[in-house]
Amino acid sequence: MSSVRVLVGTRKGAFILTSDEGRQKWEVSGPHFAGWEIYHINGSSVDPNRLYASQSTGWFGQLIQRSDDGGKTWAPVGNKFVYEGVPGTHMWYDGTQHPWEFKRVWQLAPSLSDPDTVYAGVEDAALFRSTDGGQTWQELAGLRSAKGHLWQPGAGGMCLHTILLDPSKPERMFVAISAAGAFRSDDSGETWLPINRGLRSDYELPDAAADVGHCVHNLAMHPERPGVLFMQKHWDVMRSDNAGELWHEVSGDLPSDFGFPIAVHAHEPETIYVVPIKSDSEHFPPDGKLRVYRSRTGGNDWEALTNGLPQENCYVNILRSAMAVDRLDSCGIYFGTTGGQVYASADSGDHWLPIVHDLPAVLSVEVQTLP
Amino acid sequence: MIRVLLPTHLQRLANTGREVQIAVAGPVTLRAILDALEDRYPVLRGTIRDQVTYERRAFLRFFACGEDFSQANPDAPLPESVASGSERLRIVGAMAGG
Image (spheres, each protein chain N blue to C red):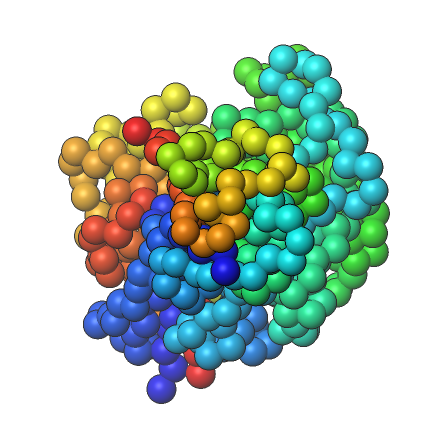
């Protein structure tokens, strides 16, 4: 019988939630790394027992933990993230240039072919790769050559928060950075191009259609259609049908097109999910109603999914890495909130149940579908 | 032996108790103690000071003999009582965050 393992990073530790394919009864393991911020935990698709976790605090800095037994035990691996060469500068809040300074790892993306190869997206924005199971890390510095001097931190910091690996073209990958935009490499991370044409940031940038500077919150793709990308931007839900060459807006009839995460159904490449948030200054659902919105048409036409979700007095946020899908026949959707709830739907979003109510604020959710 | 007190999170990382005892060859300075500590517990590299610049992490403090050595020259000798082990060097997570 198949099962699912939900990997939850929170402000004060990691939690691992497991269930059989019914996804009604859950076992909760944790907190792992109690007291530490766990920005992300992710598992290898090649070896599901190989997990990587980003562990940090303001006091003690950054560690990377690795598990080889599905999260039962962990061991710290390498935590030395050094920018290649002279780090250079990027745009600071006041328009001056500011040196690149490593702060933390936001995202860990294990390779699709080798459990010992893993990518790390960091703040200040850069991409690192390890080919020895996380023991050592090397920067893919070509990314910062993509107009890095013009990148500027957003309110959440200048973080590389999203890494997508193309399963059909091993040399292709996508990343997203706040507040720089989306970028693509077609040569295994050596060189990069901004892929932000079609984005408009009328209230955030002097040139609303600039090459870089857009506050991209999250990207998603369906593994069987990796040329189609979906984006939750600061404002606007966007879509590209040509690997980011050109984007068009698909916000349609959403009650708000501000939000953080975006996800694609495991078996329906045109079914996508977002969680509208009221605005950039009011990070909670409109009208105090927690609603996931689903489009079965790849955007523009959206339906509210509310069954099992609080429909009054709900003022949590759902952060950019806190929504994921499983790959069971009846696709499961999961998301975590800053109020410490993790919700699951075992039927593509039609019905929801909380797995847990009272965790620390949830920073990230990933799901592994186990045979 | 030099006696060093670690904050809780670093004890867990190093899988050790609150006090660790380490030997230091040559003059007993902050740098020499931290070098020896990191050699014995490599997992602590980067958690107390930056791995490249060796600057103290902003929210950590070094106390001994009722004094704060956090801003002291890391190559200056520490008091004889620390070197002899009669006083402990405390690595402290500073109060921060409200």
